[in-house]
Image (cartoon, rainbow, N blue to C red; front, side, top):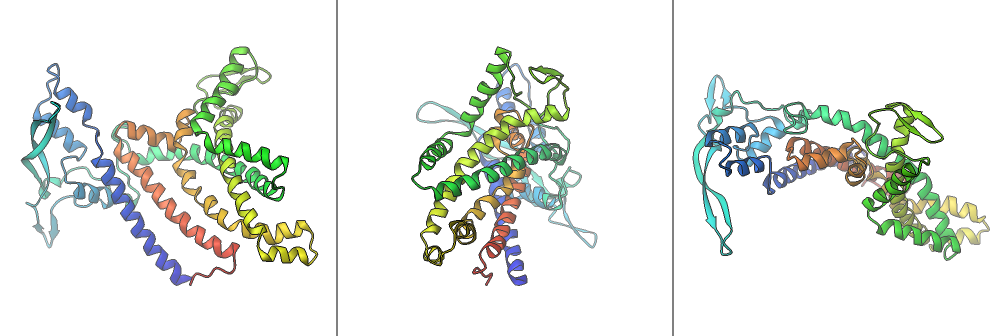
Length: 399
């Protein structure tokens, strides 16, 4: 067990580093970025943005450094200047970036113009990094400062303000999906080809086929907008709390920020996430149970005269849950990473919406922090899944 955990720990570290490097490279090499608007302004004669201004702003975002150097500073806060050994500065004149690029305009066969970098006019050397602002590195818990969403403020502040909302939303919806989806899937398998099975299977197919944003918009229309216009009881949609007191028929005046206000704002996003999860999980449980119930040991248990309740609960359900462990455990990254689409539709101030806003505003430190946390939680969930397998099925050994 100990050797297995040590081996898995090394594997997890490698996976996290590789995934962090791949995510960082993809995010920085993708078209767009924080300088897109600045380049458009530079081409407009109304704005006088000099070459020096542009280079200074690139340096502010550290976009003047080569990608490996930028990634190393983001990951471990190194290099931050020349290497110093016994008072001697080493590699001080090694170029680590380009402060001013040489660009040229090209025209393709269709007549479209594009600007490409063809050289470097002024390099950034290792000695130039001394005195530049740099984080301690994400491996030491410092995700740097936000570029746009919370300008020049630590990304950690943004994460701390959003994580409780996401944990509350995802925790409640996951718990409800488990409590409702598991027995529904088992009962549907036991009553295969019954009227309940046909109806439930059809609803589950609809729930799985429809996108999340469809249920989100539909629920807002049915439970919030239309009843509100008709003067009926309605559920508030949007954000986690109201900004001012409001009145709901049958409930009266609801104070903004109160427990009742927070509970009412939770209902619709939790409802949507629960419906989608139940549709998928119940189908999975049904298929797993049907496969297990055809096994020889289940037939043997019935032949021994055991009641159907004992056969299902003691022999079939435990083995049928083994594949389901994988799905349940991998909800762990979602508890922190959030549900991007649902949180965006309901303007829920959680991690999913924060990631959406960070990508839209090219706030790379914030987006990378969320991706890094998701990668860490995913590998932890993988390890947890393997451990749970041995608990659910004693036949599985770590060796």
